[in-house]
Length: 226
Image (cartoon, rainbow, N blue to C red; front, side, top):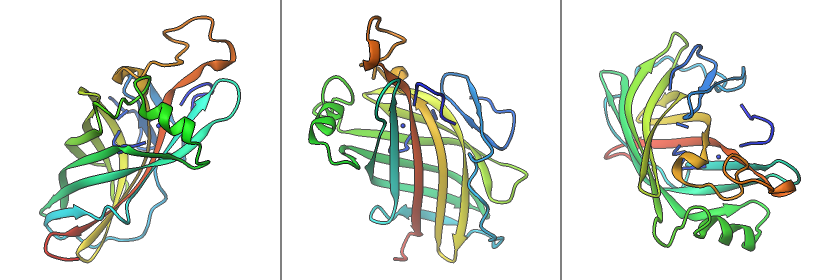
């Protein structure tokens, strides 16, 4: 959930994304457990077994929304594209996945070119040197709630790789699947420290929250099926 002051993607996300106490918690990458009854996506009744195979992400249909905050003033929301991705299902269970986020595609909903350029610049994501981010799933644990998984993954931004954990819902529709998740990351762990009150003093009302919220809807099709 949002922590007042703070809060991100993406990532791509991918997004963060370490231990949990309940199926309705988001897990943050700085070992803080965030609790919110809205963090797990509402169930879609679908109890059909997933078809085993390799699923390729439909990048046109999939969507990553980021939301960042200032301590004082406006917050900002936008999108970032998934460049490519796949997930694997074996014996009816989601077993892994890897996703590439096109950080250079980052946009703000209010179409502020100055904001977009700043986020893509050296103060933040430095897309000239690090145009992509990557999320690799390392472990999936099915919870007691239908189709809800706890996801352990490694998120790489600016060549910095850190473990994250979050919850996701996976639903199937024949030879396609839909994954949904909400989570947040502490951007400073990936050296995105600009405007952080944790690292800089005397910022006044220019403090930017350390956390970024991500909301992801992911669509994928069984390889060989469009």
